[in-house]
Amino acid sequence: MSVFFYGCITMDGYLADKNHNLDWLYQAGTIEETDYESFYKSMDITIMGKRTFNEIQNMQNIDSFYPSTKNYVFTHAESLPIKGFIPINCDIVEFVKQIEKDKNIWIIGGNTLVAPLLDNDMIDNMIIQIAPVLLGMGIPLFSQKEALKRFYLKEVKKYGQFAELIYAQLKKQVLD
Image 1: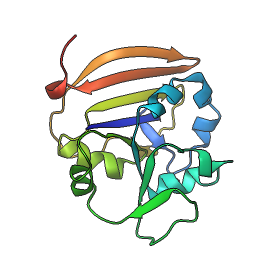
Image 2: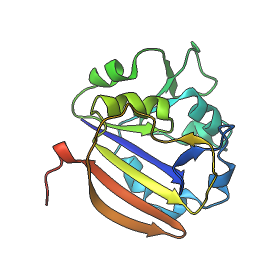
Image 3: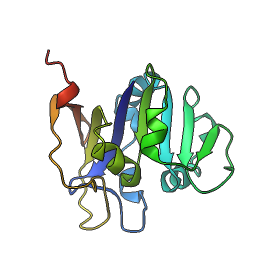
Image 4: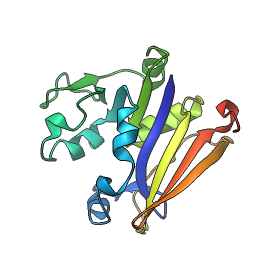
């Protein structure tokens, strides 16, 4: 099993503005300019929080947005309005530990999911796209407990105005 964070942040490290909006991202570019499709094809499971789900549920054709993955949403809701998304209400760390070992997991969005996984050394790979935007305030990607975490920079890519940094957790990285 490999756990991936794949997402876009501002140059000052924010996932969303202080109101959890992503307007800055939609104005900066599109996924067609990235390797999103090939990345997604390698995933078996997506895991997101309710705020991320709320943001994507308004997109056109959302019911076909994640067609080949099993899609979990961490929420207190017992059901979700869109087919193909499964509500989950438990500890993220324990949930990920029980997933089959041959699955690739994509953590979408939120620092409330990323932080406990980082605290438990469970994120193997980070693909971080950086948009040419400064918000000054917002929802940060990183909010884990203070502890040294080392990653290995595998690759840097440029897509239009986006920089993409591809990291692997150093303790699990086999150097080429």
